[in-house]
Image: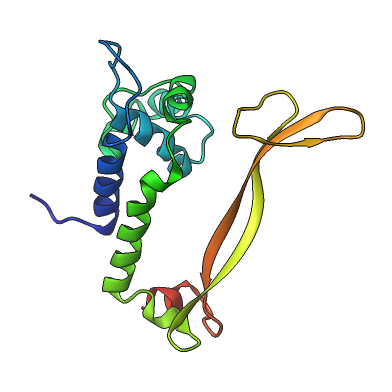
Length: 177
C-alpha cells in the first residue's frame, strides 16, 4: 500500500464518517450508499460549486472524465435533492471526529507550535457570515428575516474560526516551515 498523505488520511476519516451516517431508507431503495451521498455533499466545499453533480458533468464534458471516484471514492453521484433529503436530519456533531483528526494531525506535525501565544494557547478569531440567502426558496433549517415590504428572506449563517498568530508574516510562519 502506498504512503498515506495528510489529505488521504483526512479523506479516509471523512469517508468512514460518511459511511456511518444513519440511513433512513427502508427496503431495496438504497442504490446509492450513504457514504457516496455524504461525500458528494462535502465535496461542494472542495470544488466550490453549488452542485457536485453539475461540477462533475462539467468536468466530464471539458476533460473527458470526472474526478468523483479518484478524488473522493464516490461510485454513484446523487442529485442535489436526494443529498438534501438524506442528510438534512444528520446532526453536525456526527462529524466532530473529523475535526479531532485534523487537530491531532496538526499537533503531531508541529504545525501549530509557531502559532501558540499567550501561555501556550492558540488564539482564534471568529467571524460570522451568511452563505446562502433567498427570498424565493428556503428549508426548515433556514433563519428568516421579514422585510418592511412583507417579503421574507431565508438564509443560513455560520461562524468561521481562524487561528491567528501575531508576529507571523506569512503562511510559511504558520506552517512551521
